[in-house]
Image (cartoon, rainbow, N blue to C red; front, side, top):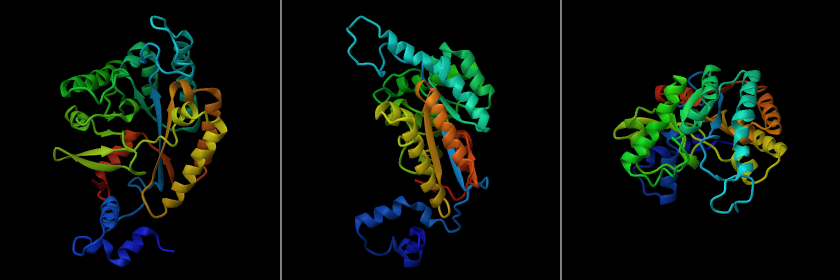
Amino acid sequence: MKDRRTFLKEAGLVGLAGFVPMSPLLASDLNADKLMQIENYTPQWPDGSRLVVSVSMQFEAGGQPVNAESPFPQNMQKGFVDLPGESWYQYGYKEGIPRMLDNWDKFGIKVTSHMVGSAVLKNPELAKEIVARGHEAAAHGMDWATQYTMAYETEKKFIKDGAEAIKKVTGFEPVGYNANWLRRGTNTLEILQELGFKYHIDDLSRDEPFLLKIKGKDFAVVPYTIRCNDIVLMEGKNFSADQFARQVIMEFDQLYKESETKRRQMSISFHDRIGGTPQMVAATSEIISYIQKHKGVSFRRKDEIAKMAYEDKNIIRE
C-alpha cells in the first residue's frame, strides 16, 4: 500500500495543483502538506535521528495568583486565602522539580523548562540548578496574567520582564516562548521576533517543527502537546499514572511507525506540582525506558529543535 506522499506524487496531483480545477477541500489538503512539494525530502532529521522526542518541564509554582486553580473546590469566600491550595503549588518547587531533575539525569536526557518569571524570582536557586544541569530555560511570561488581551506595548513588557528575570537569575537568555495555556495574542509572534526570540510552542497543528514568515523573516514553531500533557490528562481528566503511561507509549508507537517515511516529533509535557509526584515520575521512567529501547530516537531540547529547523533545507514553511 502506498503512503500518501507517494500517491500524490505518482498521481501528479502536486504538480497539477496550480493548473487544473479541484475541490476546495483537496486544494486545502495539498497546501497543508507542503512537505509533498519538497523534491529531495527525507524523513530523517538533520542530526541523523529517526524520531525526536521533546520534553517540557513547566516551572510555574510560586508565580501563580492568590487562590489559583487547584484540585480543591473553587469555593473560597472572598478575602480568604486557600492555604491547602498554596501548599499544592509549593510541592512543585519543594519536591516536584527536584525529583524530575534527578530522573532526567538518570536517563541522560535534557529537557526544556518553561519558566514563569515571578516563579524564578521566588526560587532562584532552583532555576539556577535547572540550567546548571544542562536544561534549557524558556520564557513563560512574567506571571499568569491573561496575555492575549494586552495592548502591544503592555504585552511586550510582560514578555520582556519574564525573560529578563530568567536571564538575571540563571544567566541563560531564553530564545523560546510559551504563553499561559498557549493563548497568545495577535501581536505575540511579532513581539517575540522583535525581542530576539527564535521559536514559540503555542501551536498544535503538526507533529513536526516548521517555519513561519513574520515580517519577512523566518520564525520557528516547535509544536506542543495537550495529548501527552499531565495537566490535561492527570489534573484535568483524572487519568491514573498507568493510563498516562499507556497513552504516551501508544502515541510514541504510532509516530515511530510514521517516522519511516515522514519527519516526526513527539512532545511530552510535565508540570512541577503534577509531573513531579512519585507516581508520575515512576510512570515517566516507564515511558522513557520504553522509548530508549528503539533505534534512532533522540531526546532534544526545544532550542536544539528550532536550530535544526532553521538549518534544514527540507523544513516545512507556512
